[in-house]
Length: 58
Image 1 (cartoon, helix red, strand yellow):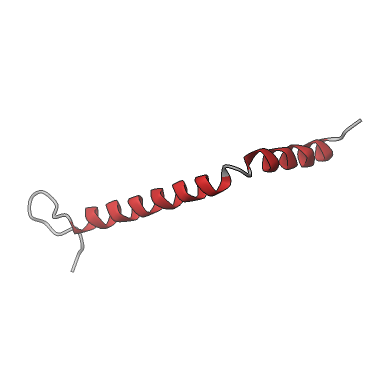
Image 2: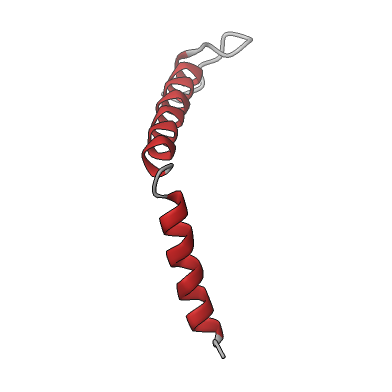
């Protein structure tokens, strides 16, 4: 019968074959999410904190 390593290899191949159609869409979605996250992080850094204190020392 199959051992654990052979089963894992077969599983990876099957997932790769079935997911090949979705990979470009997933990559695009991940890229958009990363850009949104970076933009929000920059906006949060530039936003003045309540109370008039600066978030960055110096």
